[in-house]
Image (tube, rainbow, N blue to C red; front, side, top):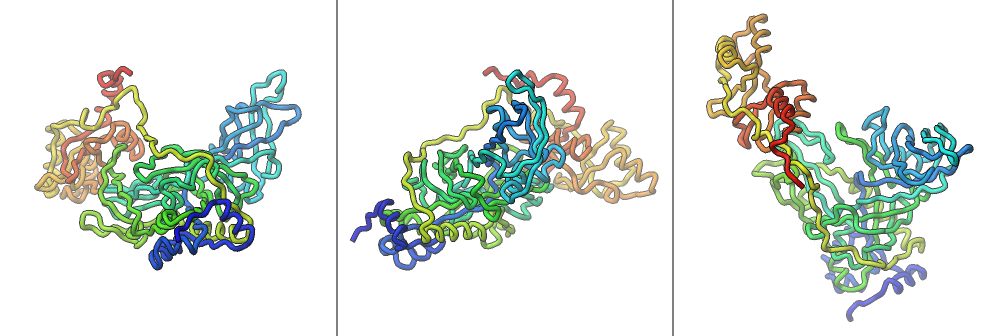
Length: 507
């Protein structure tokens, strides 16, 4: 007999204590064992869960009026600035906003966690001073219970899937995908695989605007598509809200990614009502069924190359293969906590504490994500690099290098192998030190870990490298690590002096 039940009928089962709920990973096993038709007869609700870094999160706060009152022009909570372009004593604190005195080690996510944990935080605000809001500044301590309103409103959460990341360059990269080791020595990934809410209802039949969800231990709601919502690429996202006063610290955690920035780990669970066999089949998805791409973050551009296509089962195994090489994998999301979220939601539904809602409007399936419109094309390394340059072999003598520096009037010379691949770099300063210390071999004094530039790399990225590593020239290498040019701080200075006018476009 065909299964065809409604959300109201499922809610009646919840009231009667007769509902059958399973977590999404268990549903995968059930569908595999007995098929979608029988699974639909046996299961009423499938609970999902995800627990990952969701930088696009934050909280609307209302502090109440002081005496005398103040219209807050700027406000800080534990040194983290919140947005005040709202009403007099309303603000929005973003999870990724860093502290002004503690840097990226402490940010908006930490303030939010501190409030939920019951701690008091320092509130400091300044205002203009007006007839109705005469106060110019205030400093006080507040707790969550002191606030009139604390509503979490997250513009982009619960990515359906996320590309994994690796790094083909010769230096360590610090990114929102964590620390990526050079030469593809690791790969990182996000998402909870088969527990992912949006992979268990990929056509948004039951997930939509108004759907009741589990949000950091509280009851929350989906209020729209998330920003960068791209269901055509299995990259749908959600905009969600919930009351911070009902949330629990065990389902949220502030974090800071080394050398990148701060964020907030969010626990989201969404119940999927099994209305028919079709929904049962969809929730039977497994980690082996969910595919994603591995992206090379070693290439500094928006459209980074895809170097592999892998399943979540492969990612979770601990290693994947990229170009015949075994690459270690590590998750940035917590599968343990994602399962805890799904289990807690299951428990609340079975206990009659959580009821299901039908969406009042479906999520869009035709969204397009466009790059930023820019009034100018910024130059790439290939536009200004020196194509005529001197190189020297690693077996050359110090005297050879000194003569070449004098002859070419350059202070930086790439050291290459017989086939032109980069082996190091030697500078005039290195030669001076070598003479003083009586070295004779170039290989003894050259810098072997060289900061390089890529041909298609934007010049502003090279500027950051020059500033960060306190250097004045970089060899330009191709994908085979062959030296194809040199770019110097002098080249960039000349470009800046000309104002890049030759690249400006009309809009």
